[in-house]
Image (cartoon, rainbow, N blue to C red; front, side, top):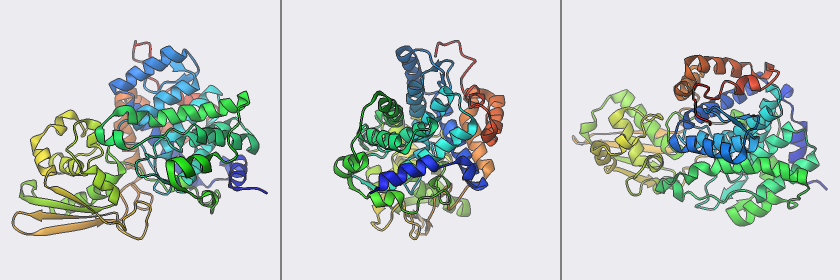
Length: 455
């Protein structure tokens, strides 16, 4: 008798890019563009430059692009480096339905394997879409323990599925690869986010690397549990895992990659509902910051953890709701250039942040469609008050941004790495990715060929 993993792996085997609607195909390309932009921008950080150099020395030369750098390495090494870079600025897309960030857990590995195998663009997009679907569904069926961070956790399975799809494996082999990947899932906590420990940025890199490794270990003859996800998520990393939810309503007419959100604030999603509410009030009333007495934010319970001690470094500032709101109100920015050591040390931002108070509403849940995600009240020194709710963040599929805004975001993230002409060429290629005979037409544009450094 078949079970949910049999149904899931049959879906993976039968999944065809040609069967998808034009709208779905467009959604996949947008996720690819957004994820590549995040990787290009993150590649400029010093620790990520050092990581690219490290994997180059450790793994040696290969066929896969180290995004933003000058050399090529094996797929497993490129995935580790590129996925780590892509999450470092908190600009990668995500999915409320599955919790977490499927794009950064699927695109880097699929891109590296497709490049290593010299696959065409349509095959790459097919692998991204099915890997994204599986990771989102497994995430949606899981209720992680309180301090378990979804980054990396079931991302290992996403990369493993994309790899299996590109390699054309049977449902039986894909099932074993999923089970191997589940048992190799990193056990990651939220604590580094609040402390600002950048080991957190390695979560997607580690899971992507181990997802590819799961497929390779299957080829070596290693076997996984009969039901790895139920064992690892249901008994170790989560309070609940419901297999039936994984396959409920599964089909190509209702893919999760069309139900994502794109980030336009360079910080944790749990900041975004309050930030959007503040922006709407500021845009309408054009009030003066000096006239603010205090700000009251009612939002999802998790945000209470994002209002503790004032952040001490850039990463922790991206997980602090009062700082993000104060940063926006004083500088007018929350993009990747706004969260810096300079803004973190500004006393006017710190002083305002200390007058922002976070309260929880237990009915608020990031996955709900029928209830606000935040209510923000701004009290002024003259006794007046304004308030606003956020139901869907600006960038969510229920409240989308325009194609131009997505292109502008990509441009702002990528131009410093690959130049104006490179940005234009990459955007053009992504729009016609399914027509490319080889994904290398794209990846050849993603390295930094202007550097004389070895990596």
